[in-house]
Length: 368
Image (cartoon, rainbow, N blue to C red):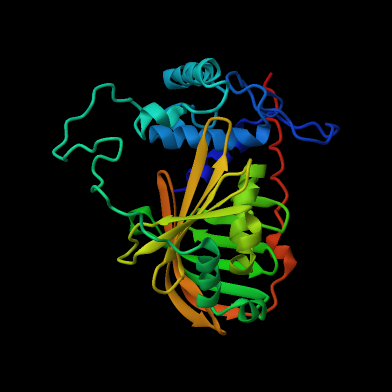
C-alpha cells in the first residue's frame, strides 16, 4: 500500500548489522547498507528517500530492481542499469550545470520505466513558448498580498485566540486506500508539535509519528526513523498551531493565481527560505480556507513531493477544521474521513514515542 513503508521494510531487511560499540553520529550509506555502489558517500538516512524518488520517477515498486528479502543482491538487470543511470545523471549535472542538480531520473522517465524518445502527436493544439497565447495588452491580474491571505486563513478557522484554547485533539474515522478498501484510522495530536496517525490495516498497524523532535514510521516488526528532510516535512504536519505560526516558518511569501480545486477558485501562496524546499498553499478565494498544501523533501537524486487536499471543514469548539483530507505521493494516495473529534482531552506522551527496533533474529544452528 505505502511505498515508503515497503522501502522501510527493505531497509530493515538489508541493512548491515549495527555494532553495539559503534560511535554515535550519522553514518554513510555504505556503512549502514550492504552492497552500496552508486550512492556511496551520501548519508545513510537518505538512502530510503532516494529509493522513493527512483520508484516514483519510473512508476515502479521495489521489486522492479531488488530481489525480495535480499535487497543487496545484484540478480536483476534493472538494478545494474539503475546504477549506471545514477552515475550518468550525476556526470551530466557535474559537466553541464556546475554540479547543480538540474537533471534527475524524472527528467526523462516521467513515471515510466522506459523513457519515450520520440515526440508524441496529440489532438491538442500545441502551446507556443514566449507567451504567444497571451492576448495583446492583457493586464496581469491584481493579486492580494501574502500577509492579507494568510491573515484571512487564520481568521477563517476562528482566529489565533480560539485556536490556542485547544491543546490536544483525538480524531477517529475511516481510511480509504487504493482499490476502495476501508480501515479504521486514529490521529492523536498534542500542542505544540506532537502527532501520531495510526492506520489499523489487516496486516497490522501502520504508524506515522512526530514526537516534537524526531519523526518515525512503523509497521509490524519494522521501525524507520525519519531523515532530516522527512523530519522537516513531518514537523509541518505536527504543528498544532500551524495557521498561527505560518508567517514565521518562511522568510518570504509570494502570491500567484491558483488552480480550481473541487470547484473552488484559489490563490497560491508560496513560502520560501534559502536552502529549504518551498511550501505551496492553495487558499480558497472566497472563504480563505486552506484547500491544498504541497510540501517537498530533498534527496540526493531529486525532490519528493507530498500533496494534501483538505475538505469538509466543520466547526469544532470554535475552530474550523477539515474532517477529510487526502494525502498523495507519486504512486500512493489515501483519504481519511473523520467521524469523531475530541479536543482538550488527555493524550499520553508515550503515544508519540517510537517503539524499540525489533530484536535481531537468532542465527540458525549450523548443521553437521
